[in-house]
Length: 120
Image (cartoon, rainbow, N blue to C red):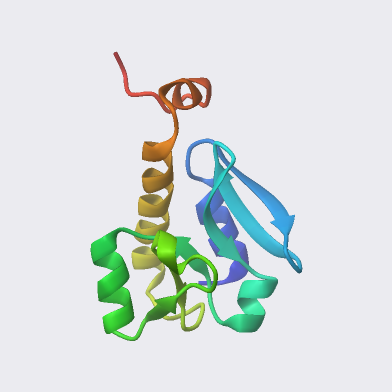
């Protein structure tokens, strides 16, 4: 997946925003909390980084597709071994999951303010 496509897929998710931090790294957030990183530092140290579930963390690392993300591994983040380590459709699914994992941790009020609250 190209960096431009990665950015588009991240920003397509509901209430997602982008800021540039840490050596020009694109940081994708929802509700002010990170769910994915691309470019900048991540490009110089490997591939894209994103939050994953416990099961996905173990599976991606065991299959050699990803490694624990520097500084974020304890929070179950992975870094792909290269930007093309996963097919585009599969990476898009992981990005949606990363977004959902972070949204689930937001307060009810924050989710409501962002238009992410489940229908009543």
